[in-house]
Image (tube, rainbow, N blue to C red):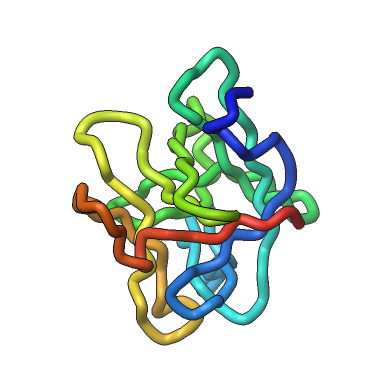
Length: 148
């Protein structure tokens, strides 16, 4: 793995830099597709480097007791999906010490994870929006990724 692709394959927590809240799954109602949200209780994610790729591309899936659904963009919301097709790839770029941006690995570029900044829980999903290419990125596009 190159020095620019800092994440090793493993279990991680993903935290918003807006207010330090952790990511979780909205299970209300439970179903095969559930949005990723920010809440007080964390869920672990298994982040795996996509081999032979120079773009720091990874797949991300849930890593909790028997729930191994991959994360996908479902209608503009990052969601845990039971779709067994090819897992979506995400480019995870370092933005500072332990902080990263997460964007879709396809065209158009810069379709990034975005903290929607709503109330905690199911009212605060991780959305996909266009991240502006400016020298300083808004914190809503930046996430801390810690080893779980």
